[in-house]
Image: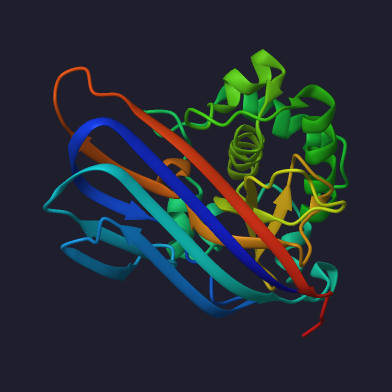
Length: 290
């Protein structure tokens, strides 16, 4: 699939403010099963310093610093990408992936950050561990059977809903509330996967669903590392394994590092800010294989 996306942010301030350092995660991933054809980032007011860097997960992010005051802050990211249908996971898996839970010592040490728990002490949420064990019991012990069973249980226990503000909830809260956004479900799936030794990370990007919605939004899902197949995407708020209509932008072992725009501002006491945003997407051609 080939697609063009325009992602706009328009911040307004009731009085002039000084913008602090900002971080932008808006450049679609240029590797894996995706090719970045073109990318432009327009920022007003013009930053005094603007540079790109490669994040720990290998994705490109942009940092900016500002000097002048402003009462308006505009960011427009324009992308053109081409996505490909990956080979079947079943045909790629190593034999070591046939039995769960996986022994951590058998995994590449580079994956350790994607195995850690979400709690402050580094442990996994007990509710997520119980859910993972239930999925493991209902499967044949293989990773793909486990993932399918896990997604079915999550979708049965938690009602998907849109939630535009606030960070991703911890797994325990999502299970307790029995409702969650895409990022909440992604975080729950990550926690469950990690508790059985499957490295998992948080993904933020776009999902160009059919039929076309009235308004597109950023989406979140999970990538699980399967030896022999590498990082593969799974959407607990969708149909499971992702296809070429998913456009990953940024990944991280922690969800809070994937925000599209993050930064600070300072100004007079009582200054108020408002945000309007819009995502436009156009599919230029249909699915392709690699």
